[in-house]
Length: 482
Ligand code: NAD
Image 1 (cartoon, rainbow, N blue to C red):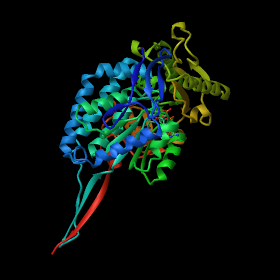
Image 2 (tube, rainbow, N blue to C red):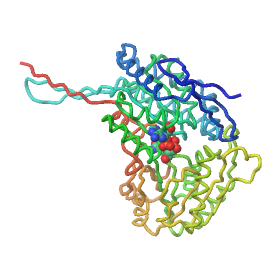
Image 3 (spheres, rainbow, N blue to C red):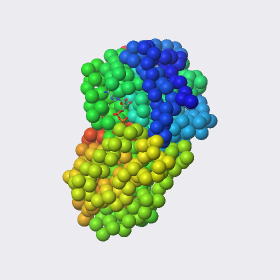
Image 4 (cartoon, rainbow, N blue to C red):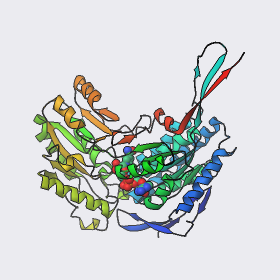
């Protein structure tokens, strides 16, 4: 039986102003798991007004920073207490294997924990002007933070933006994706149960074209964090610019994993496979381009193909190696890209189609896929596919590796696999990306590490201490005294 879900505005579960709802499907089976209230522009107005009141109220705006931190510690604790329930819900909503959903839930808890500890350490400076002056800076909350997030890591990405915003003293309106809104609603409830006053954290599921547009163009938000595609990001940034609202843009990627012949190949095979097949490749930072040194290519492709073919595909909650794609539409996009790759001259070294298993027919599955013999100019080497499809290219030397790695309009993450520290350091400094990993890829969610894009992967940084810059604004006070 599908559950019924409301919006969370001003501390209350409420229906949409026009009574509208949308169905949320389990991508593993195609069945409806929930009927969710669909926020209208009027609902977004109510949510923003509520966030504004919270910001100006003694209950939230007037709270001591350490007290904000305490509420957030409780949220981290509550998320961990409900970990299994939240992971199962995330797995059904998004399709990801249960153990990946469990990791996501732990990472979400970790965001609240990490930023809870920072709430009372957001400090300013004193600036020496000489005798007779005291000049200091204060980092004030930027105000009402609007957050628009995608469907691929709903609880993780929700927590990633909400936690630093609350730590800084902002109030939040979170719009999850209509494809996977469930755990964002649970986060909102957890916040209330842990002591957030009404309006400090509102959750308004809805479509991009109505709720998303209403939120991004709202004249009374003070900041916007957008995580999603480049195309929508550009539209959203334009809307925010109309109200002079600053934006954090976390967009797509086509991240390279560069493997040298001298790499520890056991480590590289595991790392490269995980970087593309985790979450069925629906990860902004997926290592979707493999750049391999010429002499090592044959053996590496063979090992990756064996690994891909051995992966168990199935419903997320049965905890397979890989779950389904989020939707039929996204599945068809992936199929289209594989066909384009083959037309362009690439060869399929593993996968390339939907699995034959008839028991999976109801869901939106695609096999882990390797496209070998990809040339740098091909569309499959340049465009984000957002599925379990690895484009494999080769290079001759470090110079060519650096050129290929940077031959992309994106610049989110890169991986380098080598035993030679000099090669690793040379590439780390030359690759134009917000984050470079050496002999690893991803680091347990990377809560502590600043994350964000170069080039069309976006701007601004989330995660780590860097993210506080987006949720605070600096006031300078200059005092002259006799
Ligand atoms: P999307 O851009 O279609 O949607 C993202 C969010 O924007 C959703 O909540 C959606 O409802 C909303 N939206 C859609 N149209 C809108 C509009 N016109 N105005 C306002 N809001 C609108 O992206 P998606 O399909 O949900 O997610 C996949 C994309 O997200 C990929 O490109 C991926 O790389 C990117 N992503 C980036 C990061 C990162 O941190 N850099 C993380 C995850 C996903």
